[in-house]
Length: 365
Image (cartoon, rainbow, N blue to C red; front, side, top):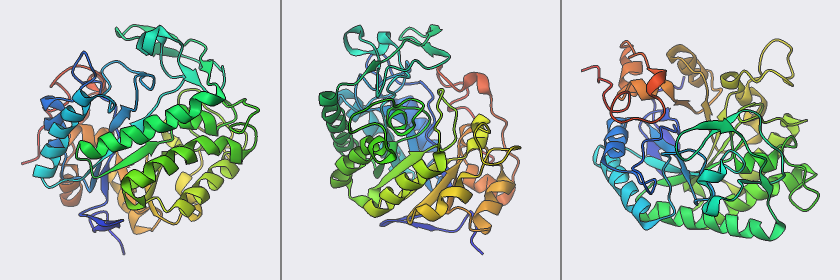
């Protein structure tokens, strides 16, 4: 029987355990410039005992930014800042992938080059509020639909960001195709109303994400590229008329490309029971989609120690991705292994700030 603490082969990497650190937006990059710095290096180094660290979402361009204080990977200063992080993680014996991010419509004109509107597949305004560049909460704007001739430039930004991640010393990259950001906006028909080659059929809606993956693979090789998806998630006002058909197709296409892992977010974290195949509760992403993907299968979302151990032992997933528990417990793998108590997390310190709730959580010993 496989355990959460058994090694896992991930391409040509061997992870020492199956406790993965989730990509966690913490909004603590140095301003101006959205540059990682020594505080970020300390935070990630503390958590280097993870089987794999997936970095916080990192914008591939200024256009891709949606949150103040979030780091980028598109300037020389950002690359140098990330080197501090990767050096610290490697010195502590860890492994770290960079998550490549373009938020699409989940932004505000104050974050955009020249104060322009955020971009999206279609001009569909999200419900809810967004943070401006100076941390004010305001209503979302209606985004501008991307012109067909703009899309190759965004694909090129992903490729350049992947090259920058290599220069910064990462061990691989994850394409963020989840949580209602730009690739997900192309995938799901609630946000994609296009009538060209990037809209309409599932094959057309998947084209953008797959072109991004195809641009990144030559930079890193298939065994150093993962993809994150979030079927059924309602995060950032997302919905699709047939998630099973859509995400089965996407995972089958990712299998053909032999990306090293698929990282699926369980719908339970967003209460995404609307449109689910059962009336009472959200579906299990791993149960619905694991067969569609031939590589390593990572699962995130609401796991507790016991449910994580069960998911691995039952063969439902290959590794479990923890977020909140990794925020509060830098030594999470050892705590889980020894059944030591977990530090409680403080939600009020999740986003923005400095050391408090970031690097000051204690190790057990």
